[in-house]
Length: 411
Ligand SMILES: *Cc1c(COP(=O)(O)O)cnc(C)c1O
View: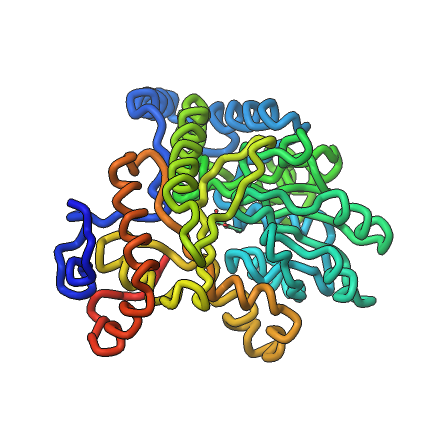
């Protein structure tokens, strides 16, 4: 049923558009039988961790797919970041965006390196290279760019700046598995790039991550560090931690790789449908991917311009949640407004005008295999209804108590 009146909206007492909750970041799950087969095999083999055959095969397939020399699989993207940061020798201050998942900053702070937040470009949502140079100090040792939404950073410009100032350049590529920059797969840039294979990411291993690099020496160091510094039985030659990926995770990753083209096709089909059905909706801008590059289309990112829609991004989220469409506001309120950074740098926001604007405007919609064309149309119809009657809705919301409909947004 199509909603056409405000009273039909769930937030004003109507029936929710969906009887079940529709989530952002529902896992992309490959062929179940293939996964179970692999799990049976690994149980028969009784080799559950410590560089097992599935981990080795997963690393081989990832390297081959990306055309990168080394892939070191890990237990999470965060641990992979921490290890890559340490192995690269970053110290002092490292420049990162604030418009990212908190782990980018935490991976530095965890080892007492100070994340210095740099603003992003309003078009690409990635580090603004021209802002970046002004953030360099004598303590700066490196830059970590984030390929947010799978949109590559301005890799060439960042590489030039890093060379000019003798800084190490790394990338948090958590969102960018299967994406390319000027025809080269993400994974080949900077000293190293880091992927996350968390359940919500494009390719998942339940939990997991990887460091990929073309630098032999760095790869050896990372490999030692993720396994307590063991160079062989009874032979520890380095300080290390436990960053190992286990065999079940690798089995999931291998299974996902078999159907990765389907994951892209689902996401791309949804992206094109959102693009068609939201076209021309005033004040609602869909983040545009470069379709000439390889792209995983894992995130449907809207920017809501409240001055035009007359309904705020936050109210829009409340309205969608009431309909059981669990849209999210990634990465609100920005790392610089979370602890401990908020206390360390209370005025960081003054240098982050685009970040502050984006964190107030961005809204992520559900996609993936779980969303069919009819469901997607229903989501777009509701958005259209709400935005065309924005002023009226905002006035009505003031007189309604809506707290029950919205329970906040958690990961
Ligand atoms: C998911 C994510 C991480 C952390 O990865 P985990 O595998 O969850 O530890 C880091 N950075 C970004 C940008 C992410 O989205």
